[in-house]
Figure 1 (cartoon, each protein chain N blue to C red):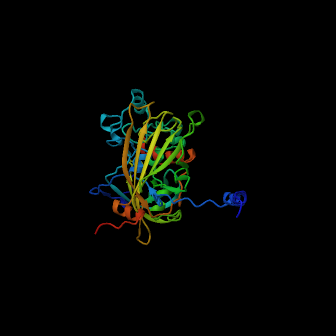
Figure 2 (cartoon, rainbow over the protein chains, first blue to last red; figure 1 turned 135 degrees about the horizontal axis):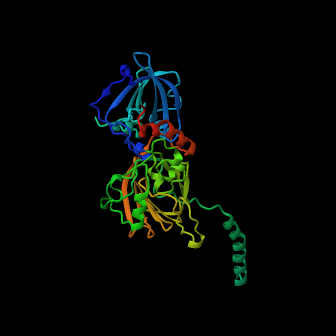
Figure 3 (cartoon, each protein chain N blue to C red; figure 1 turned 120 degrees about the horizontal axis):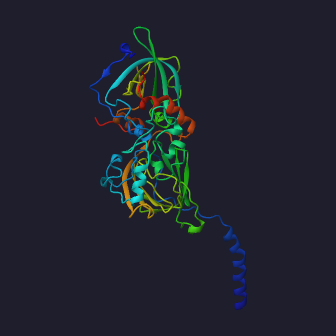
Length: 141
Length: 272
Protein backbone atom coordinates (compact mmCIF):
# COMPACT_ATOMS: atom_id res chain seq x y z
CA UNK A 1 0.00 0.00 0.00
CA UNK A 2 1.32 3.41 -0.93
CA UNK A 3 1.99 5.76 1.96
CA UNK A 4 -0.17 8.63 0.88
CA UNK A 5 0.18 10.56 4.11
CA UNK A 6 3.75 11.56 3.42
CA UNK A 7 3.82 11.25 -0.32
CA UNK A 8 2.89 13.70 -2.97
CA UNK A 9 3.81 13.87 -6.58
CA UNK A 10 5.19 17.12 -7.90
CA UNK A 11 4.00 16.40 -11.39
CA UNK A 12 4.97 19.76 -12.79
CA UNK A 13 8.62 19.27 -11.94
CA UNK A 14 10.59 17.77 -14.76
CA UNK A 15 13.97 16.41 -13.83
CA UNK A 16 16.44 14.41 -15.81
CA UNK A 17 18.10 11.51 -14.11
CA UNK A 18 21.78 12.35 -14.28
CA UNK A 19 23.96 10.73 -16.87
CA UNK A 20 26.00 8.80 -14.34
CA UNK A 21 22.96 6.73 -13.57
CA UNK A 22 22.61 5.64 -17.13
CA UNK A 23 26.37 5.15 -17.21
CA UNK A 24 26.16 2.42 -14.66
CA UNK A 25 22.73 0.96 -15.18
CA UNK A 26 19.63 1.71 -17.14
CA UNK A 27 17.69 4.75 -15.92
CA UNK A 28 14.55 3.58 -17.62
CA UNK A 29 13.23 2.09 -14.42
CA UNK A 30 12.84 5.44 -12.66
CA UNK A 31 10.13 8.04 -13.06
CA UNK A 32 12.53 10.84 -13.92
CA UNK A 33 9.78 13.42 -14.46
CA UNK A 34 8.31 13.40 -11.01
CA UNK A 35 9.64 13.87 -7.53
CA UNK A 36 8.26 11.87 -4.66
CA UNK A 37 8.68 13.30 -1.17
CA UNK A 38 8.99 10.81 1.68
CA UNK A 39 9.54 11.34 5.38
CA UNK A 40 11.29 8.32 6.75
CA UNK A 41 13.45 6.96 9.53
CA UNK A 42 16.84 5.70 8.40
CA UNK A 43 17.47 2.01 9.02
CA UNK A 44 20.70 1.69 7.04
CA UNK A 45 23.14 4.09 5.33
CA UNK A 46 25.67 2.52 2.99
CA UNK A 47 28.57 4.69 1.78
CA UNK A 48 30.11 2.69 -1.06
CA UNK A 49 30.62 2.01 -4.75
CA UNK A 50 29.12 1.65 -7.28
CA UNK A 51 26.32 3.60 -5.58
CA UNK A 52 25.64 4.61 -2.01
CA UNK A 53 22.32 3.47 -0.55
CA UNK A 54 19.97 4.82 2.07
CA UNK A 55 17.27 2.56 3.48
CA UNK A 56 14.42 4.00 5.52
CA UNK A 57 10.98 3.21 6.89
CA UNK A 58 7.98 5.35 6.05
CA UNK A 59 4.94 5.12 8.29
CA UNK A 60 1.59 6.13 6.87
CA UNK A 61 -1.40 7.61 8.68
CA UNK A 62 -2.68 4.16 9.57
CA UNK A 63 0.55 3.15 11.18
CA UNK A 64 1.59 0.89 8.34
CA UNK A 65 5.29 0.86 7.62
CA UNK A 66 6.82 0.58 4.18
CA UNK A 67 10.55 0.00 3.77
CA UNK A 68 12.29 2.01 1.03
CA UNK A 69 15.70 1.42 -0.57
CA UNK A 70 17.10 4.40 -2.44
CA UNK A 71 20.35 4.75 -4.36
CA UNK A 72 22.65 7.76 -4.17
CA UNK A 73 25.88 8.65 -6.00
CA UNK A 74 29.17 6.95 -5.10
CA UNK A 75 31.57 8.52 -2.57
CA UNK A 76 33.67 10.17 -5.31
CA UNK A 77 30.65 12.24 -6.33
CA UNK A 78 29.05 12.75 -2.92
CA UNK A 79 32.34 14.01 -1.48
CA UNK A 80 32.39 16.73 -4.11
CA UNK A 81 28.84 17.68 -3.17
CA UNK A 82 29.60 18.26 0.48
CA UNK A 83 28.71 14.86 1.91
CA UNK A 84 30.72 12.68 4.24
CA UNK A 85 30.14 9.18 5.49
CA UNK A 86 28.66 10.82 8.62
CA UNK A 87 26.12 12.93 6.74
CA UNK A 88 23.31 10.48 7.54
CA UNK A 89 22.81 8.43 10.67
CA UNK A 90 20.67 5.42 11.44
CA UNK A 91 17.64 6.44 13.49
CA UNK A 92 17.30 9.95 12.06
CA UNK A 93 13.92 10.89 10.62
CA UNK A 94 14.43 13.07 7.55
CA UNK A 95 12.69 14.15 4.37
CA UNK A 96 13.84 12.50 1.15
CA UNK A 97 13.10 13.69 -2.37
CA UNK A 98 13.44 10.85 -4.87
CA UNK A 99 12.58 9.65 -8.35
CA UNK A 100 10.75 6.42 -7.60
CA UNK A 101 10.70 3.22 -9.61
CA UNK A 102 7.95 3.21 -12.19
CA UNK A 103 6.98 -0.36 -11.41
CA UNK A 104 5.70 0.52 -7.95
CA UNK A 105 8.52 -1.11 -6.03
CA UNK A 106 9.67 0.87 -2.97
CA UNK A 107 12.98 1.81 -4.54
CA UNK A 108 14.27 4.92 -6.24
CA UNK A 109 17.11 7.35 -6.79
CA UNK A 110 17.79 10.12 -4.29
CA UNK A 111 17.63 13.74 -5.42
CA UNK A 112 18.18 15.41 -2.05
CA UNK A 113 17.73 15.06 1.69
CA UNK A 114 16.31 17.81 3.88
CA UNK A 115 18.20 17.65 7.15
CA UNK A 116 16.65 18.24 10.54
CA UNK A 117 17.93 21.82 10.57
CA UNK A 118 16.26 22.51 7.22
CA UNK A 119 19.48 22.37 5.20
CA UNK A 120 19.34 20.71 1.79
CA UNK A 121 21.87 17.99 1.14
CA UNK A 122 21.88 17.38 -2.59
CA UNK A 123 22.66 14.02 -4.15
CA UNK A 124 21.96 15.26 -7.68
CA UNK A 125 21.94 19.06 -7.56
CA UNK A 126 20.59 21.35 -10.28
CA UNK A 127 23.23 22.13 -12.90
CA UNK A 128 24.22 25.58 -11.62
CA UNK A 129 24.56 24.40 -8.05
CA UNK A 130 26.54 21.34 -9.16
CA UNK A 131 28.94 23.61 -11.01
CA UNK A 132 29.37 25.81 -7.95
CA UNK A 133 29.94 22.85 -5.63
CA UNK A 134 32.52 21.15 -7.82
CA UNK A 135 34.37 24.05 -9.46
CA UNK A 136 33.65 27.06 -7.30
CA UNK A 137 31.98 28.81 -10.22
CA UNK A 138 29.28 31.22 -9.15
CA UNK A 139 26.02 31.17 -11.11
CA UNK A 140 25.47 34.05 -13.47
CA UNK A 141 23.47 36.81 -11.75
CA UNK B 1 111.23 30.82 -22.89
CA UNK B 2 108.97 27.92 -21.87
CA UNK B 3 109.36 24.87 -23.98
CA UNK B 4 106.25 23.76 -25.79
CA UNK B 5 106.38 20.31 -24.21
CA UNK B 6 105.90 21.83 -20.72
CA UNK B 7 102.84 23.77 -21.95
CA UNK B 8 101.31 20.57 -23.31
CA UNK B 9 102.10 18.75 -20.08
CA UNK B 10 100.49 21.51 -17.99
CA UNK B 11 97.32 21.43 -20.06
CA UNK B 12 97.17 17.63 -19.84
CA UNK B 13 97.61 17.73 -16.07
CA UNK B 14 94.92 20.35 -15.63
CA UNK B 15 92.53 18.36 -17.79
CA UNK B 16 93.28 15.17 -15.87
CA UNK B 17 92.47 16.89 -12.60
CA UNK B 18 89.42 18.77 -13.85
CA UNK B 19 87.53 16.29 -16.00
CA UNK B 20 86.75 13.85 -13.20
CA UNK B 21 85.38 16.74 -11.17
CA UNK B 22 83.20 17.80 -14.09
CA UNK B 23 81.98 14.25 -14.50
CA UNK B 24 80.97 14.16 -10.85
CA UNK B 25 79.23 17.55 -10.91
CA UNK B 26 75.54 17.33 -10.12
CA UNK B 27 73.29 17.41 -13.14
CA UNK B 28 71.63 20.71 -13.80
CA UNK B 29 67.87 20.66 -13.09
CA UNK B 30 65.88 20.06 -16.22
CA UNK B 31 63.65 22.81 -17.44
CA UNK B 32 60.10 22.86 -16.13
CA UNK B 33 57.45 21.39 -18.40
CA UNK B 34 56.27 23.92 -20.97
CA UNK B 35 52.66 23.05 -20.23
CA UNK B 36 51.22 23.30 -16.74
CA UNK B 37 48.54 20.61 -16.33
CA UNK B 38 48.25 20.92 -12.55
CA UNK B 39 44.86 20.62 -10.95
CA UNK B 40 42.18 17.99 -10.58
CA UNK B 41 40.22 17.29 -13.73
CA UNK B 42 36.96 15.73 -14.52
CA UNK B 43 34.70 14.29 -15.37
CA UNK B 44 32.48 15.14 -18.29
CA UNK B 45 34.40 13.56 -21.16
CA UNK B 46 31.29 11.57 -22.09
CA UNK B 47 30.42 7.91 -22.41
CA UNK B 48 30.42 7.44 -26.19
CA UNK B 49 33.63 8.22 -28.05
CA UNK B 50 32.18 8.74 -31.50
CA UNK B 51 32.96 11.68 -33.79
CA UNK B 52 29.26 12.56 -34.05
CA UNK B 53 25.98 11.86 -32.36
CA UNK B 54 25.08 10.68 -28.89
CA UNK B 55 25.31 7.35 -27.11
CA UNK B 56 21.86 6.53 -28.47
CA UNK B 57 23.21 6.89 -32.04
CA UNK B 58 25.84 4.20 -31.54
CA UNK B 59 25.94 1.79 -34.47
CA UNK B 60 23.99 4.05 -36.83
CA UNK B 61 25.48 6.15 -39.64
CA UNK B 62 24.88 9.17 -37.39
CA UNK B 63 27.77 8.21 -35.13
CA UNK B 64 30.44 8.70 -37.82
CA UNK B 65 32.47 5.66 -36.76
CA UNK B 66 34.11 3.67 -39.64
CA UNK B 67 33.38 0.18 -38.32
CA UNK B 68 34.60 -2.95 -39.98
CA UNK B 69 31.56 -5.25 -40.31
CA UNK B 70 32.65 -7.58 -37.52
CA UNK B 71 33.25 -4.65 -35.17
CA UNK B 72 29.78 -3.25 -35.77
CA UNK B 73 28.24 -6.68 -35.25
CA UNK B 74 30.27 -7.16 -32.08
CA UNK B 75 29.15 -3.83 -30.66
CA UNK B 76 25.50 -4.56 -31.42
CA UNK B 77 25.75 -7.97 -29.80
CA UNK B 78 26.98 -6.55 -26.51
CA UNK B 79 24.53 -6.06 -23.66
CA UNK B 80 25.56 -2.67 -22.40
CA UNK B 81 24.53 -0.64 -19.38
CA UNK B 82 23.88 2.47 -21.49
CA UNK B 83 23.20 3.36 -25.12
CA UNK B 84 20.74 1.84 -27.59
CA UNK B 85 21.47 -1.74 -26.53
CA UNK B 86 21.14 -1.12 -22.80
CA UNK B 87 19.60 -4.19 -21.25
CA UNK B 88 21.01 -4.07 -17.77
CA UNK B 89 19.66 -6.78 -15.52
CA UNK B 90 16.13 -6.81 -16.81
CA UNK B 91 15.49 -10.49 -16.33
CA UNK B 92 13.10 -11.21 -13.52
CA UNK B 93 14.88 -12.89 -10.70
CA UNK B 94 18.27 -12.43 -12.30
CA UNK B 95 21.41 -12.60 -10.27
CA UNK B 96 24.62 -10.90 -11.23
CA UNK B 97 25.90 -14.09 -12.77
CA UNK B 98 22.88 -14.40 -15.02
CA UNK B 99 22.17 -10.73 -15.59
CA UNK B 100 21.85 -9.53 -19.11
CA UNK B 101 24.80 -7.18 -19.17
CA UNK B 102 28.02 -8.39 -20.75
CA UNK B 103 29.91 -5.29 -19.67
CA UNK B 104 33.30 -6.41 -18.33
CA UNK B 105 33.16 -3.65 -15.72
CA UNK B 106 30.39 -5.51 -13.92
CA UNK B 107 33.05 -8.11 -13.17
CA UNK B 108 35.51 -5.34 -12.24
CA UNK B 109 37.76 -5.95 -15.22
CA UNK B 110 40.01 -2.87 -15.53
CA UNK B 111 38.42 -0.36 -17.86
CA UNK B 112 41.74 0.79 -19.34
CA UNK B 113 42.23 3.84 -21.48
CA UNK B 114 40.26 5.49 -23.02
CA UNK B 115 37.21 4.08 -21.22
CA UNK B 116 38.42 5.18 -17.80
CA UNK B 117 37.66 8.73 -18.94
CA UNK B 118 33.96 7.89 -19.06
CA UNK B 119 33.78 7.26 -15.31
CA UNK B 120 32.61 9.93 -12.82
CA UNK B 121 35.87 10.23 -10.94
CA UNK B 122 38.66 12.75 -11.32
CA UNK B 123 42.08 12.43 -12.93
CA UNK B 124 45.31 14.30 -12.35
CA UNK B 125 48.69 14.80 -14.02
CA UNK B 126 51.96 14.58 -12.09
CA UNK B 127 54.58 16.08 -14.38
CA UNK B 128 58.28 15.25 -14.09
CA UNK B 129 60.90 15.95 -16.77
CA UNK B 130 61.06 12.35 -17.96
CA UNK B 131 57.66 10.92 -17.09
CA UNK B 132 54.15 12.30 -16.75
CA UNK B 133 52.08 10.17 -14.40
CA UNK B 134 48.33 10.25 -14.93
CA UNK B 135 46.42 9.30 -11.78
CA UNK B 136 42.79 8.22 -11.63
CA UNK B 137 40.41 8.13 -8.66
CA UNK B 138 38.77 5.14 -10.34
CA UNK B 139 40.61 1.93 -9.49
CA UNK B 140 42.67 3.74 -8.30
CA UNK B 141 44.77 3.29 -11.41
CA UNK B 142 47.75 5.25 -12.68
CA UNK B 143 49.89 5.11 -15.80
CA UNK B 144 53.28 6.46 -16.83
CA UNK B 145 53.66 8.50 -19.99
CA UNK B 146 57.33 8.32 -21.00
CA UNK B 147 58.36 11.70 -22.34
CA UNK B 148 60.43 12.09 -25.50
CA UNK B 149 61.01 8.37 -25.95
CA UNK B 150 60.05 5.77 -28.49
CA UNK B 151 57.88 2.71 -27.99
CA UNK B 152 59.85 -0.50 -27.50
CA UNK B 153 60.12 -2.88 -30.45
CA UNK B 154 56.92 -4.78 -31.16
CA UNK B 155 58.30 -8.08 -29.89
CA UNK B 156 59.09 -6.46 -26.53
CA UNK B 157 55.67 -4.85 -26.10
CA UNK B 158 53.34 -6.42 -23.58
CA UNK B 159 49.59 -6.37 -24.22
CA UNK B 160 47.93 -4.56 -21.33
CA UNK B 161 44.77 -2.73 -20.29
CA UNK B 162 46.41 0.70 -20.46
CA UNK B 163 49.04 0.06 -23.12
CA UNK B 164 52.49 1.63 -23.37
CA UNK B 165 52.37 5.41 -23.49
CA UNK B 166 54.90 7.92 -24.76
CA UNK B 167 54.37 11.66 -24.78
CA UNK B 168 55.55 15.06 -25.88
CA UNK B 169 54.43 18.63 -25.49
CA UNK B 170 53.11 20.65 -28.39
CA UNK B 171 53.45 24.39 -28.14
CA UNK B 172 52.72 26.00 -24.83
CA UNK B 173 49.42 24.35 -24.02
CA UNK B 174 49.15 20.68 -25.12
CA UNK B 175 50.32 17.26 -23.96
CA UNK B 176 50.12 14.56 -26.62
CA UNK B 177 50.05 10.94 -25.43
CA UNK B 178 50.64 8.12 -27.92
CA UNK B 179 49.81 4.58 -26.75
CA UNK B 180 50.18 1.11 -28.23
CA UNK B 181 50.50 -2.35 -26.69
CA UNK B 182 46.89 -2.95 -25.66
CA UNK B 183 45.05 -6.17 -25.02
CA UNK B 184 41.55 -6.59 -26.45
CA UNK B 185 39.76 -7.16 -23.14
CA UNK B 186 38.36 -3.65 -22.73
CA UNK B 187 35.64 -1.69 -24.48
CA UNK B 188 36.53 1.67 -25.98
CA UNK B 189 33.54 3.27 -24.29
CA UNK B 190 30.32 2.56 -22.42
CA UNK B 191 28.31 1.67 -25.54
CA UNK B 192 30.57 -1.29 -26.23
CA UNK B 193 32.69 -0.29 -29.21
CA UNK B 194 35.37 -2.96 -29.56
CA UNK B 195 39.05 -2.65 -30.25
CA UNK B 196 41.83 -5.09 -31.02
CA UNK B 197 45.41 -5.40 -29.88
CA UNK B 198 46.32 -3.28 -32.90
CA UNK B 199 44.84 -0.23 -31.17
CA UNK B 200 46.97 2.89 -31.43
CA UNK B 201 45.46 5.66 -29.33
CA UNK B 202 46.40 9.33 -29.36
CA UNK B 203 45.19 11.52 -26.51
CA UNK B 204 45.53 15.27 -26.61
CA UNK B 205 45.16 17.35 -23.45
CA UNK B 206 45.09 21.10 -24.09
CA UNK B 207 45.16 23.50 -21.17
CA UNK B 208 42.77 26.21 -22.27
CA UNK B 209 43.03 28.30 -19.11
CA UNK B 210 43.17 27.83 -15.35
CA UNK B 211 39.76 26.20 -15.19
CA UNK B 212 39.45 24.31 -18.46
CA UNK B 213 41.12 21.35 -20.17
CA UNK B 214 40.24 20.10 -23.63
CA UNK B 215 40.44 16.36 -24.23
CA UNK B 216 40.42 14.74 -27.64
CA UNK B 217 41.02 11.12 -28.64
CA UNK B 218 42.10 9.66 -31.96
CA UNK B 219 41.44 5.96 -32.43
CA UNK B 220 43.63 4.16 -34.95
CA UNK B 221 42.80 0.46 -34.97
CA UNK B 222 43.18 -1.25 -38.34
CA UNK B 223 41.92 -4.46 -36.74
CA UNK B 224 38.45 -3.04 -36.08
CA UNK B 225 37.95 0.15 -38.10
CA UNK B 226 38.53 1.07 -41.73
CA UNK B 227 40.14 4.40 -40.90
CA UNK B 228 41.08 6.51 -37.91
CA UNK B 229 38.44 8.60 -36.16
CA UNK B 230 38.62 11.38 -33.62
CA UNK B 231 36.40 12.21 -30.68
CA UNK B 232 36.28 15.69 -29.21
CA UNK B 233 37.64 18.03 -28.19
CA UNK B 234 35.51 17.85 -25.08
CA UNK B 235 36.05 20.34 -22.27
CA UNK B 236 36.47 19.20 -18.69
CA UNK B 237 36.61 21.49 -15.69
CA UNK B 238 39.15 22.01 -12.96
CA UNK B 239 37.66 20.73 -9.73
CA UNK B 240 38.10 22.55 -6.47
CA UNK B 241 37.51 19.47 -4.35
CA UNK B 242 40.46 17.39 -3.16
CA UNK B 243 41.80 14.85 -5.62
CA UNK B 244 41.68 11.42 -4.01
CA UNK B 245 39.39 12.41 -1.14
CA UNK B 246 37.32 9.41 -2.20
CA UNK B 247 38.39 6.59 -4.47
CA UNK B 248 36.25 4.34 -6.61
CA UNK B 249 37.33 0.76 -6.09
CA UNK B 250 35.26 -1.83 -7.92
CA UNK B 251 34.34 -5.05 -6.18
CA UNK B 252 32.07 -7.77 -7.50
CA UNK B 253 30.53 -8.19 -4.05
CA UNK B 254 29.46 -4.52 -3.97
CA UNK B 255 28.05 -4.78 -7.47
CA UNK B 256 26.02 -7.83 -6.44
CA UNK B 257 24.64 -6.11 -3.36
CA UNK B 258 23.67 -3.02 -5.30
CA UNK B 259 21.95 -5.19 -7.86
CA UNK B 260 20.03 -7.06 -5.17
CA UNK B 261 19.04 -3.95 -3.20
CA UNK B 262 18.18 -1.51 -5.97
CA UNK B 263 18.59 -2.61 -9.58
CA UNK B 264 16.62 -5.84 -9.45
CA UNK B 265 13.50 -4.45 -7.74
CA UNK B 266 13.62 -1.37 -9.98
CA UNK B 267 13.75 -3.26 -13.23
CA UNK B 268 11.89 -6.46 -12.54
CA UNK B 269 8.23 -7.18 -12.06
CA UNK B 270 6.42 -5.07 -9.44
CA UNK B 271 5.47 -6.67 -6.17
CA UNK B 272 1.96 -8.06 -5.93
